[in-house]
Length: 276
Length: 243
Image 1 (tube, each protein chain N blue to C red):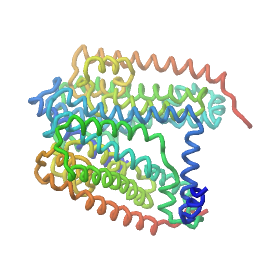
Image 2: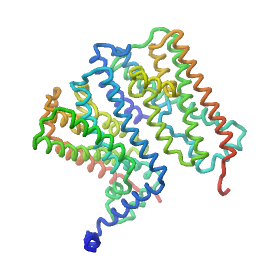
Image 3: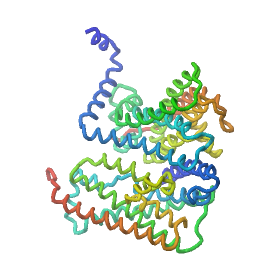
Image 4: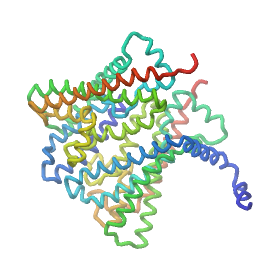
């Protein structure tokens, strides 16, 4: 009884979002067989992505200064955090459809912030299996790699996971903001959103200088997994990416969110309505 | 189209980084690929990405779902052939704005080894068109499954996940271990992308190249036949509500 009293006491500001999310979760699970196929496919996506990395290590033992167990740490961190971000805000890439069909105007009728509504309008539970593949890789990598655990290591791991999820989520948000200008240009932003995921799983030491600039600093994908992994493994970084940068992931996350919110604001200011 | 080109470039350069590092770490060649031929593989595959259907989506599946397919059956054309021909036409056109620039940018900025004999190009182009057609004749099978399943998103995603991998989109299938290579060759996927690339880049030449085209034609015939049978059976099964 006290529990109901407490939940009732939570400000009604969040009640709407909670109700929408709960209904979305229920609706996905109600078509059981379709949900199971979705879960299986999404797990398979994670496995195939892992296989693509493993295949290269099937040919060579060290790539970009890392061996397979060390790359597994980079892959696990990157793929788990990306999948969680994808689960929570990945549906923001349906925004171009809403804009083209004019259905976005419906969001304007509700007395809630547009971005929050869009973010909480869905949650893709099927991505859970893919996040699971990432988590499994991460746990295996943490166990078999030679890591000299200390409080700092644990703190860095937690910090990295939180910041990496924030960085990947922000990628979806800025991409959504730009759609107000591009209308049909999702492919352009996909280059950075999905290209960014691919980049985050790679050892950045193999990148050329332009790639290091683009995915090391503009969209700080290397900071989401590779550099923190180097720090955890106590390995030196490549030129331009010393491993102490691992502690700068919060800066990267703040930068990405700042960029994302500015892009979103530009987009919304530009939007004139669907004419309905 | 511009956005697609940017995506092709970004992924292309990321593939260059990883695969070149692999070639170098292996001491200059890996399974017969050196830096030049690996670059050719990467940029030709990126160029084909806008034309070969590796995502499994087809407008036709939407028409089955909403019943518009009934109108298609009334037209005096073969539904399967008309669908595939329309899509192949669009795909071949996409080679001009997306395919050629990808290969050109790759050749200029990274450099690549291309074959010198004209037969590689002539046979390569034939193989490329067959490859594109095989991708659509296979995706057509995913779409006609809708006669029984209505919602085909599950198998469409399954197709998307597996086809790119087995077609050699991210890693050439020559780098697969034997068991995985055998598995890939048991699907039509290598015929869509890997074989045309092998011929176009001069990796496979002479009789072996004609052999690959033969394999492609066999997959094309097989997928078309199954598609024909499923279309006939699905037409009998089809039930459109309202009218």
